[in-house]
Figure 1 (cartoon, rainbow, N blue to C red):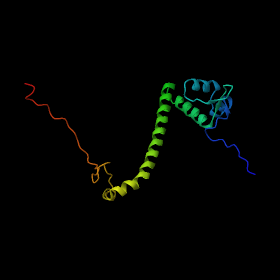
Figure 2: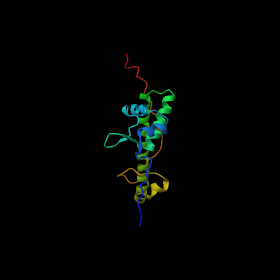
Figure 3: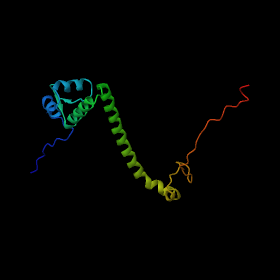
Figure 4: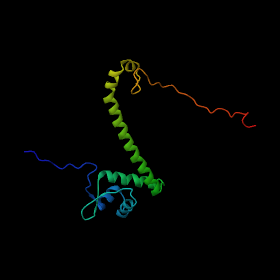
Length: 148
């Protein structure tokens, strides 16, 4: 007979505010302030008590570190938002790379000359290759005859 054991991961909210504060080395009131400002938003129980995960505690420590380095809370909020955006973009890049790998064999079968040359093809146009040439654009000097 197998028993399914509960195995919390880093995102499982299990720590009450007093325990999370002690682990993070902060005062519980600081955790409440960070929650109000949206810096670290723990899950809530049915009774509205905060429950922190290990991920939340790591984030509390990161906020505290940035604060001691002199970054104000608004700056910390912006940094965390940007880090979150970077994580989303990294995930999207990973997905797109997997899609390219998945689609690459089909593209090679359509235009073998391009795959041998290491080039892609323009969709809908067989035999047209995409190059990597760099073109420098410079504006033309003003026509002096027009200014008179």
